[in-house]
Image (cartoon, rainbow, N blue to C red):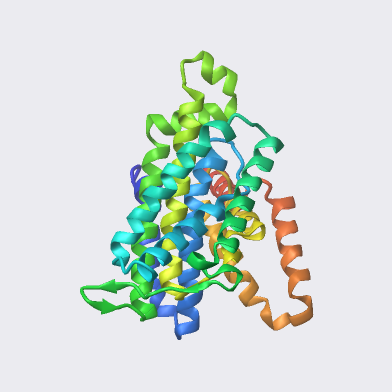
Length: 315
């Protein structure tokens, strides 16, 4: 029972159960599409939460890594006829190298300076993608070949659901193991105080660069999956608003909570669809929900609910 109450076992098992049972509640392709997009956003947010929630850093340019992974797979499969399963890891490796090169200089910044630095990085990616018309199709975007498994092109939403679900579970498992490892303890120490961490012998620059690269690679994998699922990619995926959405999902679900990142991604992806019937009042209600959540649950949804449950158990 003690082991089942831990996030790495009980939490992961609960996620798997939800994933297995969820198709019973999905009535049509539209519902599958929403859930698949939730899964893709959740994959990015789980990686981004390692950087924001545990390391205590800020990134307003992670949509750039998402778009680089997406366009990397699109270009390799579309222009050079690479198999998608080779293009995806190749794109992830390239993005990881870019993140590693960028990490050391940009992570010397702190606070709002770091936010501005990562924002500038995302803007550069957006401009490059928009201007390289021959490779990316420019502002109009480009079509992407479908994912192929054993010679069969994958179009079915049901198949895509299980692909995204498998990657999401693997990403959550990886994040939970990182958090419970010495790396995770070092990240939490850095979040608490970088000078104190340095005094205790923690190589702050090394660990910040490490988690930055890991989160970038995870975003790249999600971008590659997204581009093959949607069949089309545009520069808007590298835009500033997309980066803000990803950060908002992490903060809303609960920073330093792996499952909070999943819940935040699910809520902010599905809520606009649920509020679509309100028409002119959709954004008003959406903003009110976000404001109310952050006012009454400043630590995020999952940590607040978990704390309430712990108090109830003690009583």
